[in-house]
Image (cartoon, rainbow, N blue to C red; front, side, top):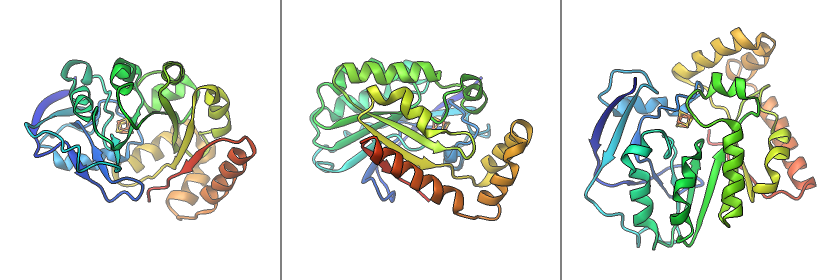
Amino acid sequence: MIAQDYTRVKDYLNKTKLKSLDYVINPYVGCPHKCLYCYASYMSSFSKHTESWGDFIDVKCTNKKINIFKIKGKKVQISTVTDPYNNFEKEFGVTRKVLEQLIKSEALISIVTKSDLVLRDIDLFKQMKHIDVGVSISMLDEDLKVKLEPNSSSIAQRIETLKVLKSEGIKTVCYISPIIPGITVFEKIVEATKDYVDEYCFDKLDLRSSFKTKMFNFIKQEHKDLIPLYDAIYVKKTSDYFEKTTDEIANYCNKNNLKYNIKYHN
Ligand code: SF4
């Protein structure tokens, strides 16, 4: 049972310090997708809820219209600390209302989701000047997905989502993000999606605070063989693994003529 409430905000649009973006829009506080590794759990401190991250959601409300002139030519991502197509979007439609306001904007809008509900808004995407729609995939194994990303769409649904978006003429991005050390095999994800993807975007798993403990417990229970690797990356803070992975991604994408971006946020 997810605790639900409303929160009044000044503006849906927020400026961001993330280097690759200018603005972010997070229509909700909280994310019922409840991924085990979720970096956004620090957002709990912006809510009055006492429930754990993943067990509450605040629906953002405001009467302020989005100033589309302010974001002309700017990079705007929906979203960064929630999934804009989490299950509550079916009922509250905040993401859809935001997109309706952005139809005439000349912002460079990127959507990122793990849900096939995004297909509902194809009619709006088709009216927008600059939009790319991204689906995040970190693994192909459905059993593992259930353990790590319990409430989001299945991997098969996400691949189908990319396929439908592409067939409807929408620019698609596959976010291989986060790259989960020892678990994400990026080449296999590319193989399974490349016919429906215009661009790949890579980011690494960042582990801090409570979700570091959760992921370490998961690794101890399910992947004992990976304990030395996780110790090296997240305790001893060595950079070898991701340096090697970055080279592998660049070599693979260049060899296969794939458009790609490596955006490591920390
Ligand atoms: S979908 Fe994104 S924001 Fe939501 S729980 Fe998963 S990682 Fe966090």
